[in-house]
Amino acid sequence: MNLMGLFRSPQNELEKGGRKQDREETGINNTCPHCGALLPLSEQLENLNVCTACGYHFRMSPRERIAYLADEDTFEELFGELKSRDVLGFPGYDQKLRNAKLASREKEGVVCGTAEICSEKCALFFMDPNFMIGSMGTVVGEKITRLFEYALEHSLPVVGFTVSGGARMQEGILSLMQMAKTSGALRKHSDAGNFYLTVLTDPTTGGVTASFAMDGDVIMSEPGATIGFAGARVIEQTIRKKLPQGFQKAEFLLEHGFIDLIVPRSEQKETIAKLLKLHKRGSVQ
Ligand SMILES: [Zn+2]
Figure 1 (cartoon, helix red, strand yellow):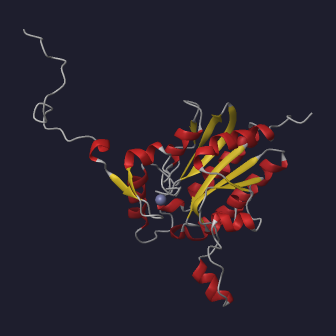
Figure 2 (cartoon, protein in one colour):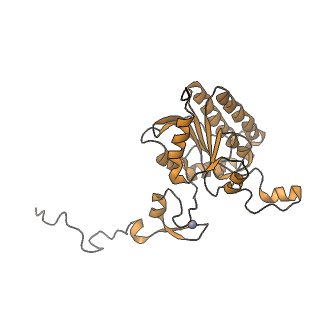
């Protein structure tokens, strides 16, 4: 058997087996919704899903966030087995849940667990923009409540990434009561002297804003995130006044004292680790 040339580079496309060139070579692009720049997908992913032209922060799944935040192999998922049921028999909800699972590849709209960030151990939750825009139903509320209870039991700080269109209307009042339930659990966690940091991402609205998203000891946000309770049009129609431009953007909220800091994605790991160190229990002598 002649092995000569077995490892040489192919001379032409046919010799390559007619394979299509990979993404980078063909330049598959994504268009930035903020500045319209055509971004090679590989470049966008390498830049933590942030537009290299204008700094627009694309939405991110929980697993993508875990990859850039948690120290390697330290994330351990908690309560991953919980999933929603259509308890009220709401028309179309079953199908919506199936679609959400396919779109997000998650069982529910939040991923919880523990991890180390620059060697600082903490409990974490990440809401999922691909699962019904992180809407809060009974399971989302239950998982977050259990996470605070777990963190209280183990004296761990909690870091929570929020993204949400609000309460899950298909679960009616059961979804609304998650606001009180999560708030109660985080208050107990806080009363015991534990630290809670929220990171608001685009969009954080409705019942999530009105409960655990704005209850952090420190409230951080990603640049340009929309943060609010009701939509701008609803507010304008109710109070019959024109609202200022961009009044539900993170930058406006920072200027008016509703949030504490805005941190771009590339600096989040380091900033979160600093805050965890600073608020470590027993760190003040
Ligand atoms: Zn852009």
